[in-house]
Length: 49
Image 1 (cartoon, rainbow, N blue to C red):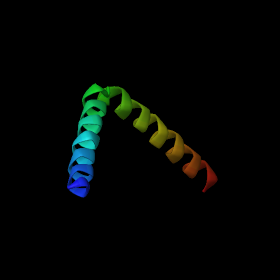
Image 2: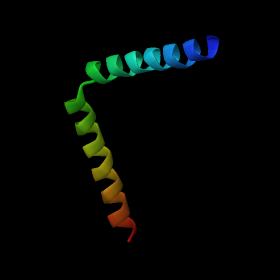
Image 3: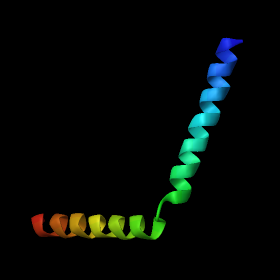
């Protein structure tokens, strides 16, 4: 029925969109940004203590 179509169709569409985003992401770049953020946070925490 309509509920099954909305649930399964929506789930399939969401999965497809998230898969495309995941595949297209430059994970090396994201890891470098995360490392930078962690280092900045760590330095600010050490300076405050």
